Image (cartoon, rainbow, N blue to C red):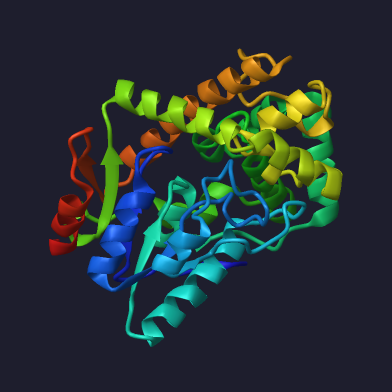
Length: 326
């Protein structure tokens, strides 16, 4: 069983997608004497640049970044693998007398870093492949209903269309006879915000939606379709996790004529697969806004978070100074 202790005395800058984390993180890192560790489950994949808003060469030259480009996009990447890399990176940063600043918006990673993780027994590739095949044929909602029977607590926490986590929970139960939620009881034990350095960027909803829409439009202008087309040409298809990334999934559906097996089931049941590029862009906007909503729900459930009100008048340098003073 993979067990990880919480990381201690680190800084965290998080928030929903398009909330301005990158610009603020550079200012904050320079004030803290910190290096940045990515807190993004999709930035671990090589060659997925535009859709993940990965920091560019100039940004990485300004402040050292870690936990980016760890694996090929055909590989699945577990939370245990992320935590292994994260703990090693924190130790390395501290050995050089630097601070560690996690930046990104993957709530599950944030929670595991703050509270630790016991992730159950090692994976069973054969059983996992069988469950993934069933999810593809029957739909993730069917597997979610099955999970609700054997582990109601895990089913309550996991979205009915989050195939990867549903499969993992069913895999753990099948291997051990013990609910996944039993391994994760410590996950419920949070600390007070005043005892932590976890800062969430909080925008008015209408402004955040405008920022998301603008971000998505920029991604397509910068060549997201061409990036995905190149990935599919070189790899054939992306791995289960990478193919579900918002933006990539919609473009894959568009390029495959909405017939690709890995995208047959929409993560948003009421939104049909796109049939042309304008519809692809609008669908990506809608799903990104829904993703941001889920991120905020997660953050609100973490007692460690301090909320930072944001507006168009926010001065990034002044805000970085204020956070560093904490």
